[in-house]
Image (cartoon, rainbow, N blue to C red; front, side):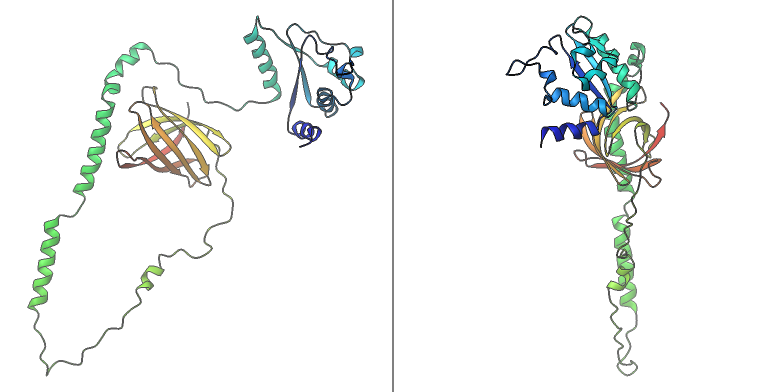
Length: 315
């Protein structure tokens, strides 16, 4: 791409241009010994001049002890640079100067809100949670075992199925068989199409709505819970369609993290629990534009899937 066109494209999409000025900025010469800043084809001059003409915010940043040039030291199309407030950055107070520059930029470009992590837990609180931290894996294993036991108890007993089969067989064998004299010609029932009943479950063609669904931004604090009453806090950040989150237990200790994406009304994320070092998959759906979410969290290594729901909470 032509470099002049690249500069034009970049300026069309930016709100601020930072002009880095060093102590030799004015003295740099081209191959013929002329000051480059007075060369109409110099890219630095083109960039700054175009930004000034388009009324883009231009911030001169002085580095390594440089001083702001005067108007008579600059070509006419750059003289507006001298009327801009300059920021200084020095090696001796690097962090302070950079913070000042960031503060100036924040007044021009509003930064995205970032969720604040919960405050560090005091040593006393850490002692109170030590038992849970040591026995978390056992509790998780017990929960998985309980789910498996409930599923086994909900299955019909094999003996009951066998008894029903025997009873039906005896009733059939005990029926009197009609004689050839009394019996009428056998009526062969019409074979009904087997697909009639299934058709009622087929979704009609073109049932997918073409209307675009908008979901509210998910950035913030959410309460994740399951039917057994287990809860944790998820702190989300969203960048366009991609998301990332941190998980905190009831003691406000970070125990997991994940990242994924939102497609339509579905959120899909890879999950990792750092406390027990196990990976999983979180799949959630929303029916109210992101006001609340329901779905499942699965752990392939354990072979388990649990229903979960997620509600927004205040930090």
